[in-house]
Length: 401
Image (cartoon, rainbow, N blue to C red):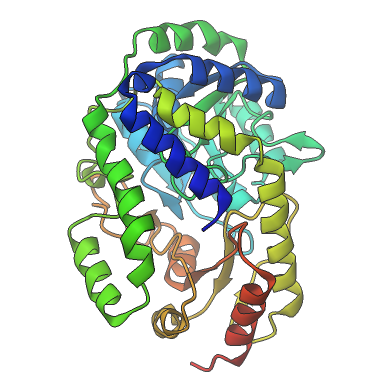
């Protein structure tokens, strides 16, 4: 049981016993101060990265008839706020060697209706910042950095999130820091500040019930499900809960078809802001540990069946290897009690999304689709022991398809 998750559980329990914490604005204000010190930019905490992106687009007056360029090999949390704002997401292909946007394909897909580019730093690897900035300047487009995976990462000694007109952060589950839900907006373009502040001033808090499933999921996982996860009973249970959408509280059924749940956008609840503040204190150490594990993988993984990406400067929210047939590997990894992940096993994650409703056309981004079909996340969580890392390496090196 890792210390950060134990502290998170204690904070949640205290809040449940003291409901007034939910609408306490002080923790979000404190978090804002800390983030502004860290990024040296005006910062606005909100209840999710989705809310952050939606509010940014609205503050830039992007809506009906407009197009926003995003990359495929992404989460539905990116195209959905574009759709909610009334605009159309236009997907660009990726560079298979980085899993970030192919800036050449991006430039080809600009039209007279294009108003903004969202530059995703996939899994903490800096995207092609210089090229995208040049394109945005030449075409007079808003450039938003998606730093949901990259809190703490730098490029040319500057923090990711400080290059574009604005940026968004996410503190959702399995992000660099996790408060179960939450996000923030960073603003570099001063023209966005007044309309953004006006929008935020109009927000209230979502109902406690809208977050209860998230909290219930957290405790159910910690107290029971994770303890039986690798057993035969656990496998049956997990498959059943997956069918019932138990684990996908971060993606509502509405979002699978491009519709907006009523809890976006809202203010950042005091409960989750407290957790984010607590985790933010340790962000550098957590990233350092993730990177240390990644370097060990890069140095010691030798099985030629697997493709590794080139090392990068940044953070490693996920350590990705590519294999032509991931399914059997997941089955064998489970038997050995390894926590392997599948971000992103679809060009728009999760695979259950309605492509048509989210404006994705199958076959339009072949490199993204190929990568998604081959993606495997090796575990690199900060509390992972050296012995666990060595066991994963031994398993991969000896694996035969």
